Length: 103
Image 1 (cartoon, one colour):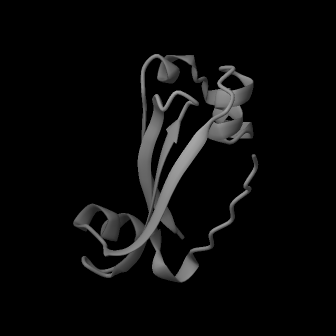
Image 2 (cartoon, rainbow, N blue to C red):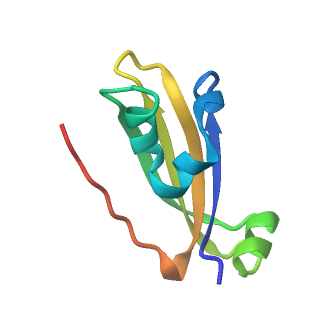
């Protein structure tokens, strides 16, 4: 059962440095820090209730317009240069937020 869909935009030149094997074992955050040497990253996130688009409805098996949760994130360097932006749409019944906060 599909519980969500993910849409991400990773800004050049960061996108060209990503390899498939990076993404099968590590989070994007870990890849950006460990593989690309980007430290001091900051993420701005939002979570909001919304209605499923036709594409999302088909992918997660809900009616068009059904309640979904949309999690958005923008990842920045210390200098506020955007590294990644995007959002995920989740089925309302199977959504859990888990965050690790660090300073």
